[in-house]
Every structure is written in structure tokens, then in C-alpha cells.
Length: 234
Ligand SMILES: CSCCC(=O)C(=O)COP(=O)(O)O
Ligand SMILES: [Mg+2]
Image 1 (tube, rainbow, N blue to C red):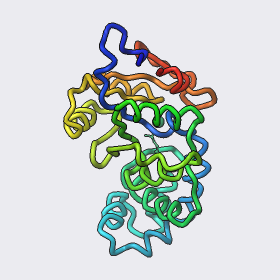
Image 2: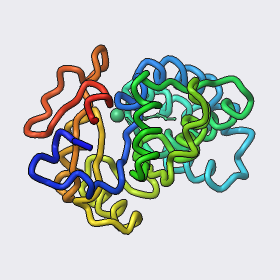
Image 3: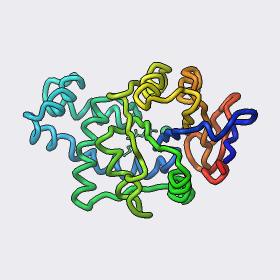
Image 4: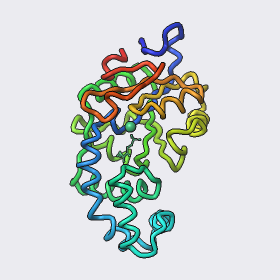
């Protein structure tokens, strides 16, 4: 096995591969026009119907709005600005999970992703996800791939609640500790250079994913190795 960023290192030491979702395994379009459009009109009714749910109540409190209308306006503003605020991700995640369960949503994965995940899993690499999307949405996303259920390949799920912000090294230290693995044995794949910087600062191996047509296609990845497809991670 050859990873672009493992020259002069033993690639067999990579025991965990941690995946970003949007821009890496899946298109930004599928998230923004699929998931975001689904959540947008449902936020208000969902909040009103789940006021007694502690997770929903806490997310609404953290949003800072006094009424449902105010809360929804703040949430819509975050969605418009692509602010990946944790309360928004919590509420979106719950709505999306219900949408997947009801058969109203399907996930998207780039064509090279399902075969790569299956091959890595078959050769003994362990797979995890670290996304701004909440864990409650990550699992149904992988379960409802058009290429079949990929969630069985994913052993661990991390988000901004159980790990922390994606641009802070401490979050990656927390994940490596949870995986009980030395940081140098973990490879992180992401389309966002600042996330790769944070992971590398925590001692992880990293590879940038520069997919044609994605918002970060022309991003500067600095010294980080970069691939355009998981097929290049042979
Ligand atoms: C079911 S995945 C939801 C995707 C999402 O909401 C998101 O913010 C993805 O961000 P990422 O950190 O994976 O780039
Ligand atoms: Mg991403």
C-alpha cells in the first residue's frame, strides 16, 4: 500500500483512516442542495415539536434566539453563510436522520469512494469519520449510499461535539486518544487545508483531497500531499 505522504515511512503503520465528508467523500452540491434544502423549511416545525427533547432544547438555547422565529432566522443565516455552528449541525442532523429513516433522503459518494473504503477495510485498515455534520447524520449518510450500506465499514464517528472544532489540533489529539492509537498511525483525508494543518500539528499523517468542481479545487494545500481521487491512494 502506498500513501502519497508516507514516503520514507512504513505505510503498514497506518492503522486508522479518518474521513471528512463534504468535499472529500461526497459532493458539496449533495449536501447544500440535498440536505440543506431538506432541513431549511423543517427547522421551525421540528423545534416546536421537540421542545421537551433535551438535545433539541440545548441546541435552541445555544442558538441564542428568544422565539422559534428568531431561532430559525439565526439558523437560516448560518446555513446561508455556511457557518458550521454546532447547534445548527445538531438540529440539521436530527432532521436528516428522520428524512433518511423515512426514505426521503439518499446520500451521495464520489464513484471512487465506495470501492476504496471496501478495499481498505478488507486489508485491515480501520475507518472513522470526522465531519462537521453531526454523528446522528453521519451514520444514516453512510447507510444510505446508492452503492449500498457503507456504515458497516465505519467503526467510529466524530463530530464537533465529541471531538471539537475541525481546525484545532486538540480535536485530533482527542480523536487519536479515543482510537487508542499513536497519532502517526492515523491518516486524515480532507478537502480543507486548515483541517489538514490542525491534524498535522497533532502529529497525524494527512492528505488533501482536491476534487474537480468542488469549492476547494483550487485551494492551496502547502506542503501537504494532495490527491484528486481515492484511487490515487493505492
Ligand atoms: C451527513 S453529512 C452532513 C454534512 C454536513 O452537514 C457538513 O457540514 C459536512 O462538513 P464536513 O466537515 O464533512 O466537510
Ligand atoms: Mg469537507
